[in-house]
Length: 306
Ligand code: R2B
Image 1: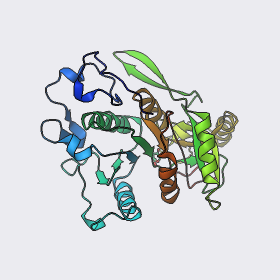
Image 2: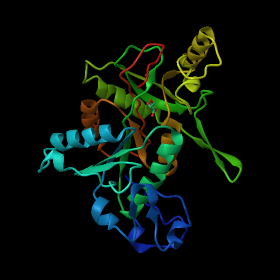
Image 3: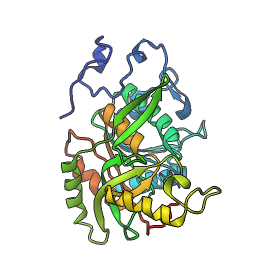
């Protein structure tokens, strides 16, 4: 069941009662207009409930092209009317992000790294709030480097961890560090693992996903413009990561998990589209936990990750 929450200010906004309160910002209600700058949308310029009120699944991923392909794929899978070539980028007025809507599914790009996905998530979560959406599940569809896994292995993430293998996301706010949890529900991860048994060709494991703030040195790569460590030190770090339960590395999971958790969104990360479709229908039975799946088509311990 979706939680029934009051407006976070304590003021009753009757139209918002009995609805998941995705935003956690008491200032929002006193604002005359909310401009979602990087999505090129706003509460005065767009009818957000009419445009997005029926959204149930949000899929986010790094690349605009991939998210367009994903929207086209979902359009076909759902057997929606119309031509896939006509699916338009709702954010075409900006080149920051791309957004496509097909039926109840929204497909949005977020760029690379924590700051980029974080800006998009702030504006997306506000958009869902203004559109009065309910029971929304978010997926992150992305790439990541596997740690000690065969190429093609899907990782179902039970925890997003930082570069010290801690299940937390640190955000500096007004000069102070705020720590938010990225812990996820183990039972849910186990259940998702069961679904994966219906796809025998896709090896799937449960593990931690490590989020770094750099693609090169931050992920122990030897091929950046700078490298301050030896090959042995690289493998020592990856060995420790593996011992700490890390099965893959990427660059957005901690803030994604933290923001979904704080904002009452069920978050999930997945890469295989056909797998995703199956999960859609399996998980659309209501849940109260946070979901987060990580998966990847890579890799060996050199964790190539493009
Ligand atoms: C995976 O791939 C990108 C870097 O190549 C980054 O966004 C990530 O998390």
